[in-house]
Structures are given as C-alpha cells and as structure tokens.
Length: 168
Image 1 (cartoon, rainbow, N blue to C red):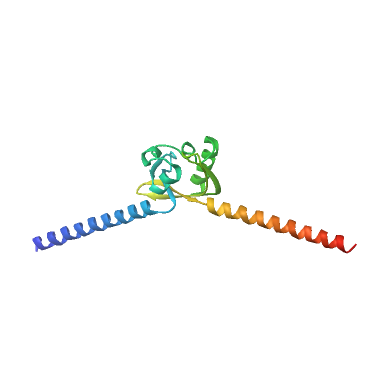
Image 2: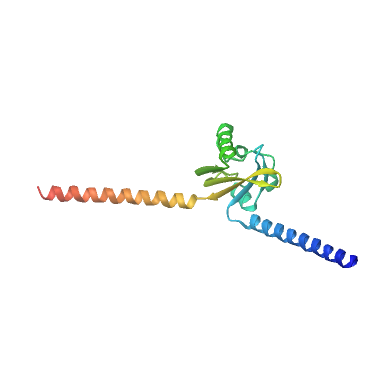
C-alpha cells in the first residue's frame, strides 16, 4: 500500500505543478497580448516591477527601462506631486482612475490615455495593476464632432438671420 500512496501523492504533486505552470503561461499570454498598456507596481513604493509590450510600444521605452521607476518618471503624470497624490488615492481607496491623461512618449508624440489602477494581493504583498488605454482616436472624434456641431449651429444662426432680414 505504501508504494501505491507514494505514487498517488507524486502524481498529485505533478498535476498541481502542471496546473500552476499552465496558469502562469495563461497569465503571461494575457499580459503580453493585451491591447492596453499594463504596468505592475509595488503598492508600498510605487515603483514599477513589470510592463507589457503594448506599454513599451505606447511609450517608446524598452521593458527594462520601466523597472524601478515611478509613474511620473515615465511621463504618466506631469510632476512628482501629481504622482504622489494619485498614489495616495490609490493606497487609500484601492482604486484610481484618470480619464484624460496626456502621455508624452519618446517619439515626441502626445498620446491621450485613460489610466485605471487597482490594488490586489499577490501572495503576502500588495501590488497595483495599472491599465493604460490609448484614447487618442476617441478624443479626436469627440473634438471633430464638437467642431461639426458648432459649424451646424453657426449655419442655423446664419440661416435664421438671413430669413429674418428677408422678412423685413
């Protein structure tokens, strides 16, 4: 019986190890294939511990350049004080959102992003996951729509003025 139980125990360990590896592979695939920038921060220090490929593309930085930096050092916030205030909000509530955050990348472009951060436990420590979505196209379309609405308003006003002039 002892040999049988050892064999079953070994098989269970192998299956558990395999399940963990599959889970890690799935997580890594999601992290690397995401179409949003993802940054993982140490929740105590605010230092970046991981960046996904989309974030690298968005900023023009290499993944290793992010490591150990704070968000303001990579252009996410305009200065250290704004960065500290956002990080305090995140630590206090466990959630932080900034809907229109201009990001200046290494290519000299200004990219409008939406920034959402959440705290969660990773083992015995807290980490923050920051999702950064490029909303530049949405902002461009909103501005275009506003300009079209203003043009239509001006046309309607001109038409009304013209008709009022004719009726005099």
